[in-house]
Image (cartoon, rainbow, N blue to C red; front, side, top):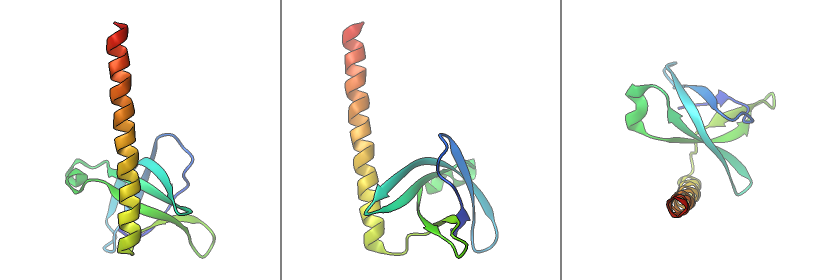
Length: 108
């Protein structure tokens, strides 16, 4: 995937990314995380045919006109670090959900 203009300030957001062949794909913005001062979008394909590819992570950047765009993460170390941070956040969220479920069970 290449780049796409995007502003990240809505609760439920969708973006359309265009690949190098001009094909467009729609993604839901699942999360936006900060790692080492950069913002990253966690995207999930809306199109059922693309769901097999799973999540896509892209970095927010500014283009020549200072417009916010999404770009591929080219550096392997940067990619690994962002994936690691997001996985940790997902694990913490899962633990919180489990704890909330247990509290709900106690109340009933």
